[in-house]
Image 1 (cartoon, rainbow, N blue to C red):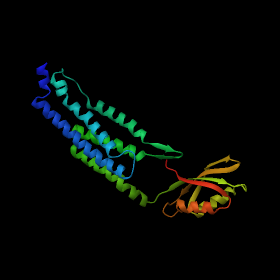
Image 2: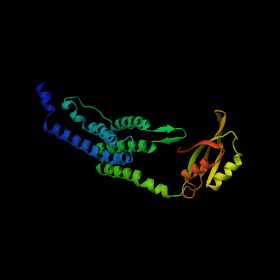
Image 3: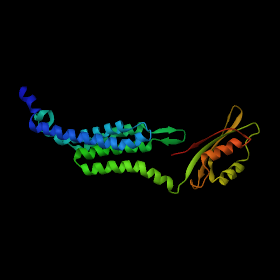
Length: 244
């Protein structure tokens, strides 16, 4: 029994543990680097979450390459397949990523956070198999993508979709074509197939989407809100972005 215990503390075993420990430390640092952008922007998943995901992925990958030291090197030869371990890591992280995706009405948020958590696990896997430069590059690219590409995307031409929910007073709603003409004047096109009509407290309620042909030239949501507030026939309204 004493000989078996000593095998856990042999020079080769300690060297393997040190190597694994350095991988875990590097994975924690790179994961926290990726997660800082999310933490800075006030997301639920921050530096701790990303660091733990990256470190765990690295641990589950790197230990497979040291099968000779399992159980103090006293176990019989073990046939290992790192790709099966990586498959399990990807599956497990997929469940974690699904937990941060939130659907609120017609809008979906959390997709970038979920994708970046998946990237953090891939960074850990790269560290675990020894691709240190590639892992560092991937972590930096992920961080730059989340911080800089958002600004670039906002400057490029694109469309924006809003959902309008209008509750009209006792006088009733105006003709739909009149609303469509007003939306076009403000730079939006009404999606006619999105119109849904309901009644609440004996008042008609219309819900429909409007699409900005050019979000840089279309009226801002606060300008639309001022228009709705000034309209005599509108009893209440809501404007929400649609992301899908």
